[in-house]
Image 1 (spheres, rainbow, N blue to C red):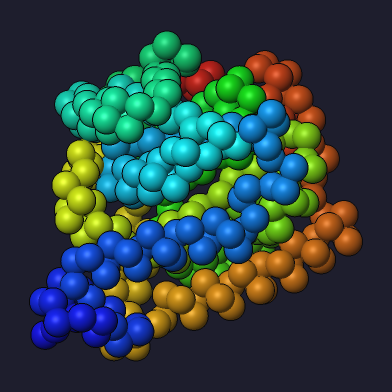
Image 2 (image 1 turned 180 degrees about the vertical axis):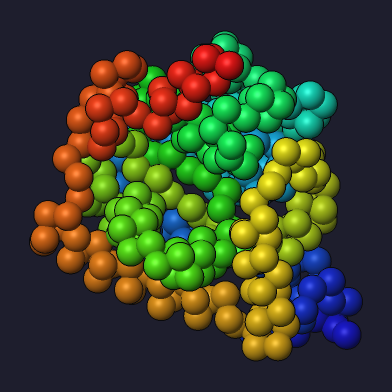
Length: 322
């Protein structure tokens, strides 16, 4: 099958759009969609100038999504004095797995000449995920511990670096899975929090004093297209699943969406489109009704939380008590 735009051989068929694209036009298509999302979400504020530059922190894990995001952002803003990119890699303490992905991060950031910072659970919390999984004091999936610790460090160091924006490599599949999980779990408050944290108007989120606003420039790109982009560009991505990954429920949702997308192309885009609109309505209702818990400083670490002791500190107490 030839490319819809030239006589070249197609390397990708997007059933949701009917497009057959050759390598060059496929890469161009991904670049355009990411840059369009940057414009639509107003990631570059009007008051950004060379004298008043923006600092963007990228959560770089070394996986395909964050590597592709970093590559595109670097090529987009390398010559733009209004934007300074900083990559932040978090080492969870998983033997072999994170060491290999860290090598990919180092190779990429050195090649792109981007500032790269590495922090670890061991240095910050005196824990390693390999040991947490063995002891499991809260009887939870490994991802539940890891997600809390990772979010805490992303927030902490984004703030330390004076970040104006924190960017993550969540793709279309990730976002559709999260949306569907929130619906199926009936977690209305989580839908509102999701909207306020990363989907709502960025100008409103920039006004919040407690958190660095987040953005997801890859959220229009399907996961397989991200992987293909990384392969065709020969990017140093470490494409291996975490050995402690145990999000069984998300895995079921992922397989469900694969089947729906196969039989009904465009399902993921439709889910996200409807979810964002409904999430905005739900978030507005929560704001009007005052249902959000009051934010306060954790009595242990001082981070912003809705409880006396934040979830991170509660988990660390359980882990260190073993």
